[in-house]
Length: 515
Image (cartoon, rainbow, N blue to C red; front, side, top):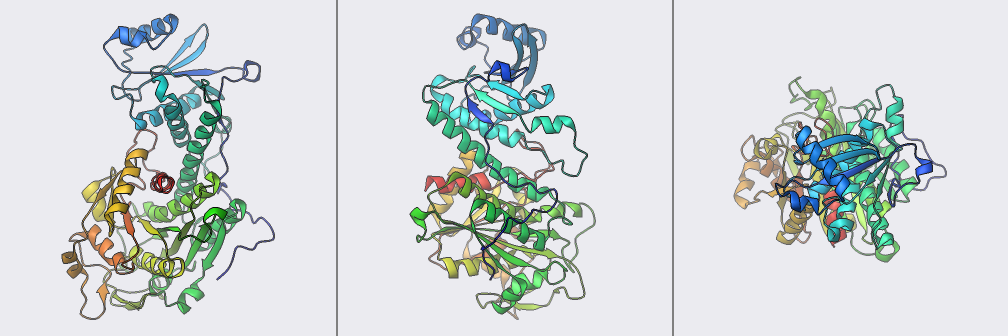
């Protein structure tokens, strides 16, 4: 295996931007002399009680809000925006809706602030408390910063750059000062850094397969590890063959870009020898389905079959940027599933890293094969405290849960419940599916220990049951099938449809922090 000992700083592929700490969220009003114009954002709750609303604002602002409500039918509904020019400057009104204490709403306010900054071409945006309760302001401000970072994400690397895009990258969001200014600033930066790590995962997932393939992904991870002082290891195709990783080797055999397993380890001094939390993410950089080829329609979206692996990279990036006290190991098995004279076939029987054999019934059920080898290796080498895998694994989970919930399967109730709670805190929701032993019969094979696909019945659960075969009984494990949420087709608040969402990064970081 190759290590992380590098003498120089290798470049990233053209168009791939390095993750970096975020410093554009600050407490305090900007220096007027340093900014030619400022946009002030005011959150407004939705209520029929004008006296109640009046308590939130000084008289001049209240009258202006009433005028907008009357003239432009501004109802302060969730995410509703109005831009107003006044004698005192530009003001943006953002509706909070009726449930104005929901953390998701605060994130949406941040995304709206970023969007209004783009539309008005402002470099400085000031967020005032408005209708947000004073005792909730520090927490709300952190969520607003997170939402602004998520909402400011754009992917335009392959378009001709505009001056507006360059200016928007300089946008700074300022917050009205709080009594605990130091703590307030720290919370803002940490929330924004977590979102920046998720955005890095989104950026990688959006890149096309001619830019990100297994070999270039190894280069990207090596560079990121070098810049963030992460430990880096790669199990090459040749090494995987020696380790009897039949899943990884078979899936990637048909591509000229050979498969690998990338390992990024964050090991702070305080927990360097402690069992890590392990995250394993599927990174099929492009999935044709192999010989069981997919229909041509929408096949271009199969560049998103690497979203689980990109989320795992995002978790490693976040752990390093946030200086978390917990040791974290992130494994990214990566392959390109292509039809070729050397590609694996339906009917092949392959031997996995843990010695079990798999009868290949469908080469389009490839993700579980590369995940299984990586999971088996990580459990053997690192003895993790918890193991969480993420994968765009099945179309069945999209049919069942759509683009709202990810499927959750686990051998440990405590871990499952903690992950569900973390998901609720960060708006990345999980729905638990059963792993009852009676489903195991769907994977029976007359020729091998199991098949890789038993057909359409209980498709997402089949994926979980397959992976469970590679988890030691003593390791608490959770499988997240993120096929429906990794690149949702519709806009949702601070996420744009038909782009990668970065699902899983903030959820797992929140889970690690809660430990």
